[in-house]
Length: 417
Image (tube, rainbow, N blue to C red):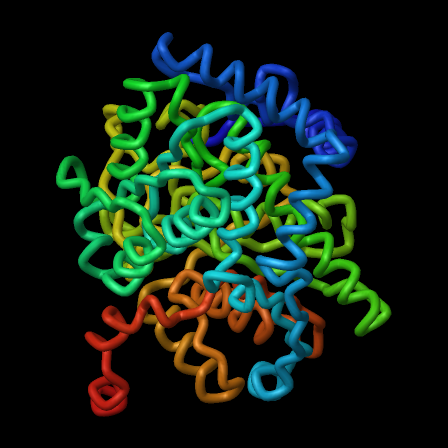
């Protein structure tokens, strides 16, 4: 099921996105987004919205934020040419290297920005959720940097498969709560963090890690991550004298993808392609391909596309990648798909593993399993579009995934082949 727009409506909504009129004052990305929360959270969200509008335009706040990005996070991150993959794929391949940012993924951009905002708003403590663990690590690091106590909620399934990141969070001073309820993955971690926030909406700041949830989070997180696309756009023009023909990013909740895509939405000759987790199959519960298979509904404070059954019950998901294992998606992604500006495809667990191994062998870079989905999507596109220039958002490094990769040894895969 989709929301149907006329061609005139699609054109108008795209112009609204380009002109910065999306989201509107109600937090709507066209029909998506908004705020669906318990009444007890409304004052906290109103305070946050007021703070976002104030500080994201405040020169002193922005100067501190950009100083931290430059001297602590390590921005700008590199643009890397990948000639060996390019020869294998018959394309010109470039990576935007968020794996080189402090803590190993794009998540740190948003974490330090929101932690600074929490400090300005007078928060006494910070809570966060995490799936793959990278947002949890980034939040723990940012809070340590700013002297804020931090508690991270993480599904018990993800605690097991992302053990190195759990240890990193604790060493950075965070308290990690393993969530045993629900599906025990990212969705349950967000649910638990929201419940905790309801209990103390004034003294606690919820540092949400993706472009999901109630307004103003989809907008706020996008603005924290838009530095990725702004840098990449400038770097491509400097390196090649032209923008890429296509840009690829993996999509779970969608923060790294929107950060890369948003500054290029107005570049209509650039194809924007998001790659979701196709998991082990296309039946409900076998994948996390929300934009490919989802229907509109409300989840965790936002109206967006969801994986749900015929009765409207949100379903379990599967992905080899903990960070993509989520049954919803950011409302801006839902809008960009429905108006045709971004195309969304999926890559299976096996395709992602193959792409990860290929990148390791040919370029000497171990990407995260999340990122490997973008590589798989880019490889398929390159074979159908020979000789073209493409950019892949390398959202994070794969050290954290070694416990999972150890269950798929190369020897066993080679023997099977």
